[in-house]
Image (cartoon, rainbow, N blue to C red; front, side, top):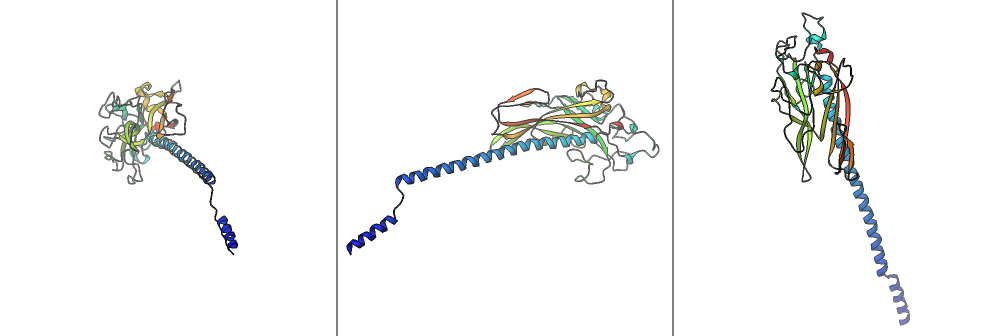
Length: 320
């Protein structure tokens, strides 16, 4: 009887046998390897997503900047057809000028500031000072790094009856100008100046110094450039003049005073950047900037050049 009990206890003990130390160590090692592989895969996916997000931000910033500048260039020189003088309904479009917003007269006064005498105007590597009547292009405010940007000025009229949320009767800073004297009270003159200004951001506890597309409107405080789109590091503009025998785009400082009214197209080039490092790219990267210079960057910041040409659709409305 005792013998049978011992046999039963041995059998029961055998069925309750646990892992040996070797088996336990092997199991732990396999578990660590699996968890490590999962962690590496997760971090890799997270970094890839971060990289795609940063690259998308740079591309979106460039797209918004191009849309903003393109819309202004295509509006430049516009004069509503229902504002044509009823006394001279057959007057040619050339009689509808830019720069006469103070009186509404159908002539272009020589006393108007230079940047208001044509649909578009520009400054090379400088910004516009709207308080001046001559030499309106002045040096950018000193900053580190220095601003590398031209300035585009687009001037046009509008008789939009909609509010500022739907229409176009405000300047780029959403300020509404006074109606043109002698009009029906719905005719407005707008002149917007676009360039880059320094921007300082706080990201994840770090201070980032970059630039952004900014605008000063004619109905806003003078020379008050309001940042619109962050992450634009370079802005270069060139102009195609109608009848120019060279048929090439010129920088603003190469356009003669009388040629501004004959500009039929504007080429916009900008460099957009990500705000944070794109960590999956190599330590150094190369790209060609808007000055056609090859830049080699040691940081993981994504930078890319974008170029687009916009027609000045209303160039025919300006008197050369």
